[in-house]
Length: 474
Image: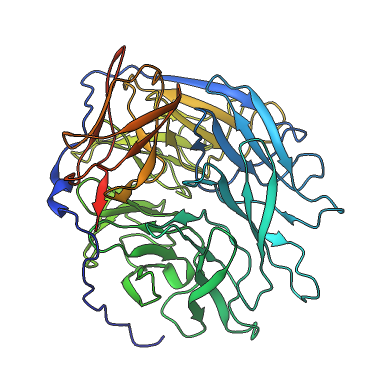
């Protein structure tokens, strides 16, 4: 192994009071109801095998996501689902006439322009290229898909994680292989892409690095504006990379703290990053860990099999401040679990999958603005092709952002429900000008004098507050 890279001190580019992370999330529920509902079964025709990452809520209040198989040609789909479980297939991958990519494995990201962006893991139409290795695509809520970029191994190969839209408006992501035509030593990359498809390689992982193969997507953190991600090889790692490509390892796994972090990180309201490992820990079934932006790591929970095993999807911090997630194996039926990790460190198994209601949930959860959680399983159900489910913990509605940061004078999107007739929008107590576009979407402008804080929307039926603060940038 090469000598471990030294982490440089990086300056903060955001005008954010980092202490805001010490605040508790707004909504706290003391006594929670708990209702699990299987909403639909995938059957091949409507998709099959949804994999990594999570569903995403659109401007219309519906949920969007990909499946890695099934559809008209058997190579995956993009679908829309109502909160009640009615599915519409928007696009089927693998048409011989179109030359698009196949096997979309990561989730979608809702961009500030209202469209969704995602990746396929293989093929694509790159003209005379030798190694068609996946694509980046844009798809409208109506299902019009445009391939923005075709990978050719030398510029990256086999993307599996979701993209993230940075504060500069560009998209950032990873490929699990490639990055140079010397196939024997190129093991993935971090890239930046414009909304029109212009790609820039920021970092290429090579043979001899401490850890390679970035499998998951990235998260952009507050305070420094840098991106953080994970790699899989040699036990795995957590790394940091600036928008300009300055790279450093924060932590190398391989001990009792877990190994093989396969999912994307999140940044919680305490300012730390939280993630999962697929294996390792005290019982070998994986862990939840937290790590500071300076690289100090601590285990939060080790799974022992009875409470789940093999964590492949990202965790989520919900409006009650607790962490929620999935395990793809273990539990009462060895088919995976849903869990809650309380702020005091207590883990509660919320649901044990049993096959008929789904099995092997390898993706994470999304909390819709209704307060309910939604997720997918990669297998099980009536046809064995997976399911979509909801979990109601009795948490109330809130508002969310299309993009959670912006400058004074910039207009952004607010997601919610029951927004028709809204009378005020405030950011940390400062009134903002706004336009109600629909019952589930508002456009609002960051007001002069505003500082980082929570957004409050006053509707005819009550007041809705954001789950996390909105960050005001320079």
